Length: 120
Figure 1: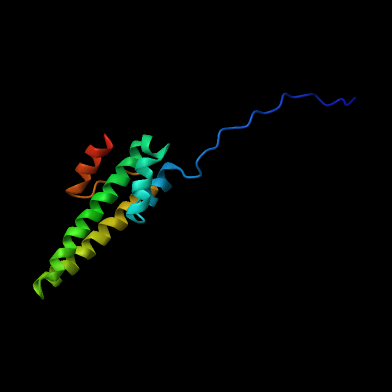
Figure 2 (figure 1 turned 30 degrees about the vertical axis):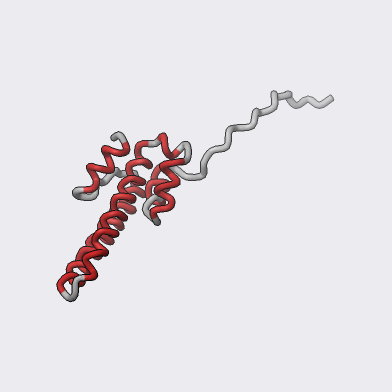
Protein backbone atom coordinates (compact mmCIF):
# COMPACT_ATOMS: atom_id res chain seq x y z
CA UNK A 1 0.00 0.00 0.00
CA UNK A 2 1.13 3.49 -0.73
CA UNK A 3 1.31 6.29 1.81
CA UNK A 4 -0.24 8.86 -0.58
CA UNK A 5 -3.73 10.06 0.34
CA UNK A 6 -6.61 8.79 -1.73
CA UNK A 7 -8.72 11.49 -3.32
CA UNK A 8 -12.15 10.87 -4.81
CA UNK A 9 -12.22 10.96 -8.62
CA UNK A 10 -12.92 14.35 -10.12
CA UNK A 11 -16.23 14.33 -11.99
CA UNK A 12 -15.99 15.40 -15.62
CA UNK A 13 -16.93 19.01 -16.13
CA UNK A 14 -19.59 20.04 -18.57
CA UNK A 15 -18.24 21.11 -21.92
CA UNK A 16 -17.85 24.83 -22.12
CA UNK A 17 -17.84 26.95 -25.20
CA UNK A 18 -14.43 28.16 -26.18
CA UNK A 19 -15.62 31.73 -26.77
CA UNK A 20 -15.97 34.39 -24.16
CA UNK A 21 -18.67 37.04 -24.52
CA UNK A 22 -16.38 39.66 -26.04
CA UNK A 23 -15.08 37.31 -28.72
CA UNK A 24 -18.55 36.03 -29.57
CA UNK A 25 -19.88 39.61 -29.80
CA UNK A 26 -17.08 40.62 -32.16
CA UNK A 27 -17.36 37.41 -34.17
CA UNK A 28 -21.02 38.15 -34.80
CA UNK A 29 -19.91 41.00 -37.08
CA UNK A 30 -17.72 38.86 -39.37
CA UNK A 31 -20.66 38.07 -41.67
CA UNK A 32 -24.36 37.74 -41.15
CA UNK A 33 -24.04 33.95 -40.74
CA UNK A 34 -22.37 33.93 -37.28
CA UNK A 35 -24.89 36.54 -36.13
CA UNK A 36 -27.77 34.26 -37.07
CA UNK A 37 -26.05 31.24 -35.52
CA UNK A 38 -25.48 33.11 -32.24
CA UNK A 39 -29.19 33.96 -32.13
CA UNK A 40 -30.13 30.30 -32.54
CA UNK A 41 -27.53 28.39 -30.50
CA UNK A 42 -27.23 28.15 -26.73
CA UNK A 43 -25.56 29.55 -24.61
CA UNK A 44 -25.17 32.58 -26.87
CA UNK A 45 -28.87 33.18 -27.40
CA UNK A 46 -29.28 33.54 -23.62
CA UNK A 47 -26.58 36.22 -23.36
CA UNK A 48 -27.89 39.76 -23.88
CA UNK A 49 -24.44 41.08 -24.87
CA UNK A 50 -24.04 38.57 -27.70
CA UNK A 51 -27.68 38.93 -28.78
CA UNK A 52 -27.29 42.72 -28.96
CA UNK A 53 -24.25 42.51 -31.21
CA UNK A 54 -25.83 39.81 -33.37
CA UNK A 55 -28.96 41.91 -33.93
CA UNK A 56 -26.90 45.02 -34.57
CA UNK A 57 -24.91 43.13 -37.20
CA UNK A 58 -28.09 41.95 -38.91
CA UNK A 59 -29.50 45.48 -38.99
CA UNK A 60 -26.19 46.86 -40.26
CA UNK A 61 -26.20 44.36 -43.12
CA UNK A 62 -29.82 45.25 -43.93
CA UNK A 63 -28.87 48.93 -44.16
CA UNK A 64 -25.93 48.06 -46.42
CA UNK A 65 -28.27 46.00 -48.62
CA UNK A 66 -30.70 48.92 -48.96
CA UNK A 67 -27.85 51.37 -49.63
CA UNK A 68 -26.73 49.05 -52.43
CA UNK A 69 -29.82 49.98 -54.43
CA UNK A 70 -28.66 53.61 -54.54
CA UNK A 71 -25.71 52.48 -56.64
CA UNK A 72 -27.92 52.00 -59.73
CA UNK A 73 -28.45 55.77 -60.00
CA UNK A 74 -25.75 57.13 -62.32
CA UNK A 75 -23.02 59.40 -60.93
CA UNK A 76 -24.78 61.03 -57.96
CA UNK A 77 -26.12 57.70 -56.68
CA UNK A 78 -22.71 56.12 -57.01
CA UNK A 79 -21.09 58.95 -55.05
CA UNK A 80 -23.70 58.66 -52.30
CA UNK A 81 -23.24 54.88 -52.34
CA UNK A 82 -19.47 55.17 -51.94
CA UNK A 83 -19.70 57.66 -49.06
CA UNK A 84 -22.41 55.61 -47.34
CA UNK A 85 -20.44 52.37 -47.65
CA UNK A 86 -17.31 54.01 -46.22
CA UNK A 87 -19.42 55.28 -43.30
CA UNK A 88 -20.94 51.83 -42.77
CA UNK A 89 -17.49 50.25 -42.85
CA UNK A 90 -16.23 52.68 -40.19
CA UNK A 91 -19.27 51.93 -38.00
CA UNK A 92 -18.77 48.19 -38.53
CA UNK A 93 -15.11 48.47 -37.51
CA UNK A 94 -15.99 50.52 -34.41
CA UNK A 95 -18.63 47.98 -33.42
CA UNK A 96 -16.15 45.09 -33.74
CA UNK A 97 -13.53 46.90 -31.65
CA UNK A 98 -16.05 47.92 -28.99
CA UNK A 99 -17.37 44.36 -28.78
CA UNK A 100 -13.83 43.06 -28.29
CA UNK A 101 -13.45 45.50 -25.38
CA UNK A 102 -16.72 44.30 -23.87
CA UNK A 103 -18.61 47.51 -24.57
CA UNK A 104 -22.16 47.72 -25.87
CA UNK A 105 -21.78 50.53 -28.42
CA UNK A 106 -24.92 51.46 -30.29
CA UNK A 107 -24.52 52.35 -33.94
CA UNK A 108 -26.51 55.55 -34.55
CA UNK A 109 -30.14 54.92 -35.52
CA UNK A 110 -29.98 51.09 -35.74
CA UNK A 111 -28.45 50.53 -32.30
CA UNK A 112 -31.70 51.26 -30.48
CA UNK A 113 -33.53 48.69 -32.60
CA UNK A 114 -30.84 46.11 -31.86
CA UNK A 115 -31.15 46.83 -28.14
CA UNK A 116 -34.92 46.46 -28.35
CA UNK A 117 -34.65 43.12 -30.17
CA UNK A 118 -32.01 41.86 -27.71
CA UNK A 119 -34.18 42.83 -24.74
CA UNK A 120 -31.61 45.18 -23.29
